[in-house]
Length: 398
Image (cartoon, helix red, strand yellow):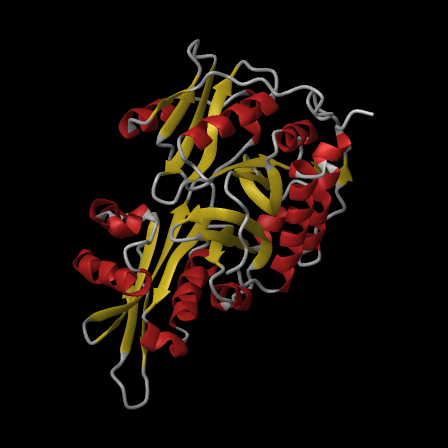
């Protein structure tokens, strides 16, 4: 990887210059003070709160950690994580001190790195970000940088209150040229696809109305008897030696390292997840199984993580396997986002669909989202009602 070197000086009339640059280890304490100033002690991302993780990221070529500095004080911070093998990047953790927010520092930091990794050095084909919905500013920021709106994560994190996040991504021409077409999706996913299609040039999907073993809801989905292993080093090492099979070959979860295994006593099924007790968030990263029904696996995972006090669980499935998509919906994992080009295999990029299940009461009272995201939310709520409320009327005996 070419050496990283980004720096920009912003001159403000009558005030000290602001320097935007790559973070250094000696900035760590000041970076943490900035996040504490803005968010208090509630910020859920481990890399911000854990000094060892922060140091590793600052010193690692797979990260661009940008800071804005004024008179020795860190007043802005932003992180890009890169996966050079899959040519993906994730931008996160953007924060600016309140008194400096009219200077577009977050935009400048994001733009400097975006140009460097997609144009100057050609390191990645796409960059994605999740934006908070406490106000409109993060959504406008990514919109102004050319990011495409892809969907929402309803009630995805629980800090003081439930938080809904938005999913957005920047696609290079190369990413879209590598995209595998002829997607095969279930009808419930089509509205999400069409919202994305209005923003970028996608082909018309093949809509397959397939039925699963539990689609009629006449029989209860049986549960696997999962045990939980939460030893982080063991989970990490075991996952490195495990090749996902069966349904798990059709999922992806970028930039997540598992710290939990759910395993059956006969070891016939192992599911790897990332979970956080702080914000009650969990995502499925991969796994192996001899179970014939993905609906059984997902329902079993949902019940187990709920018992572990998780409020949310997510799985991202490719857009070419309608039977697996149907199994996810049968297990009441509701689609909420459509992510073109998310998965890179060989010389192709594959579209994916975000499915999630929440265990708390849906709460959108404090959500502020711009128009297209509202369309995603409407489609999500429609499916949520169909699968959690109206279902009882469909299964009522005559």
